[in-house]
Image (cartoon, rainbow, N blue to C red; front, side):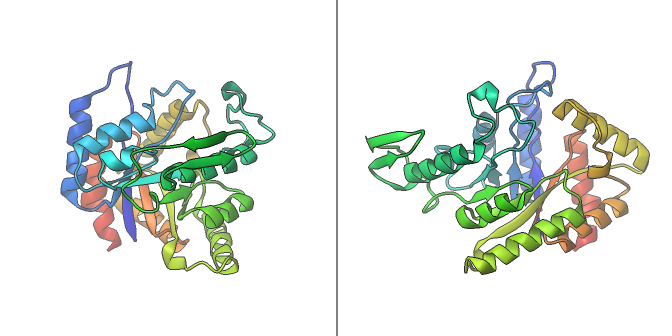
Length: 289
């Protein structure tokens, strides 16, 4: 079982606390328990969430060893080959129309964009004849440090998305709103597809995000985490998808995620990030070893 941690990427009341951000990531590296730190993307919403590319660029400058998840192109050079790329087509309720994307055909656009992205990463001269994008004799430099390109993780919940992950990606990341039993079914689909496509399971990773809050008062912890997610996503109803309570309760919940098939567990506190980091490192993760 390996661990990742979420990056606190909020600008509360339009103010970014750069000192706290640097101190937090320095502490993550100092603890030595987390292999990577991941940002999320929320383009439209009232949560005050910073853009992931800029957040990860700043994070690359604040760290030396920590791998950084969910970013693009040049950041792999800035971080000296520590980037993990996360992609997903998005499901119903996503604001496709606001970005000029046909909400009935997001997958076709996604597939073509992914192919173009890989071409930009790998080809010295880019000749791409797509339905939406066409390039002739183009170039993109610098190329990624990692060859042929940074690991590409896929999200999603539909079986077609998991098959797409195995066909085009290097890993599958289960959503934070997916319960362990449902995640176990997703893992089954992924592993069956790995066999069907003749891929070595050792070259493909499976992870899962876990929204977690350590608190001796489980009801209080759940309420705080639920409120934070409601602010983040603009809607409520998260109580069934979060993990909150004393350290032993959190450890049991995380172990259930590992038993369901997660090799990498992305721990995602949203409230009191620095305090939660210390509690996860001192009281929860040691209980899992």
